[in-house]
Image (cartoon, rainbow, N blue to C red):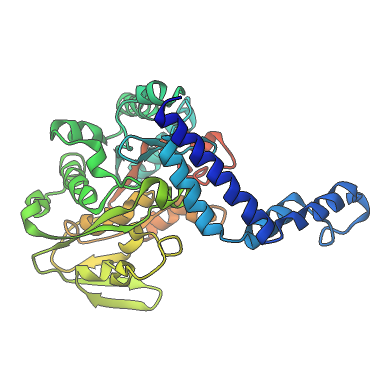
Length: 399
């Protein structure tokens, strides 16, 4: 027996002992009685409020589990020690070398997405409103890495390739930021957090320059894109400071903590923001919640640092032209604030957050006199409509 195999077996035995101790310590074995009642009950004779469900049993077990957080981290340490990279595949979480989390996407026809965006483009054209589609990168550029590293197929980039080719055929202006990434000689991993599916704030700044170029090329804008050059910004970095949304599902002990970089313009800015508290005057810093950068909070309970940047409706007093509606996913939190530097006014919408039976997107666009609509989506939004249970099911429903 090799020393490495002996160590792995010792770790496994040690972890099993800890589980048994925790099981006895918190009385988790008492849930067996509840399970017995669950099996024996006649659900047809019980009111819904009185019935025992597996969800209730699992919830009670989880909430009462002794040392739950410690066990979670121990499990992560064990997985790391055993170099198990696809343990959380049921949550579509796979860990590459360097503790870099990736997810797969199923194949889709793109038929629904194409039909909806063509219809949306026709509506906008009737009202002399520009449409620009922007495809952001995801955390890998080559789908084959899944088959090579995890033995499964992912179609994330192939779906995007096919959809963008169909947009070209339909004459709909679009930008593929993956091409810009390659042309700039960047490593896609440097644009994303290791423990989160979102891109970083510097990546949002980088991408916005190309979105502004697209507005100039396709929508008649004249944005001075030099305002997005890195030398015009201050970068403040915290190292090993927070845990991303995916990292919280697998533990910090498994993948470690992420770095975070805040980006702010060095030049003067002046805005009026429309918020739930009314109209507020301020500068670019109002987009940022500084309270997020509190490292005294528990990493599992704190708000995701990605959302430190907000998507306020704005009026930029330093720019005279351009009124843009930015239809986006959550990547937009690190994008809209920078886009605001190049246009006079705008707002953003994440369609999954709206009841589309009550919110009339098209009426909203006309009533607010937007001259341009930018749809900016990550590739994994394509095909979400294939699954009614997906949180992103309605992202391409432009009604």
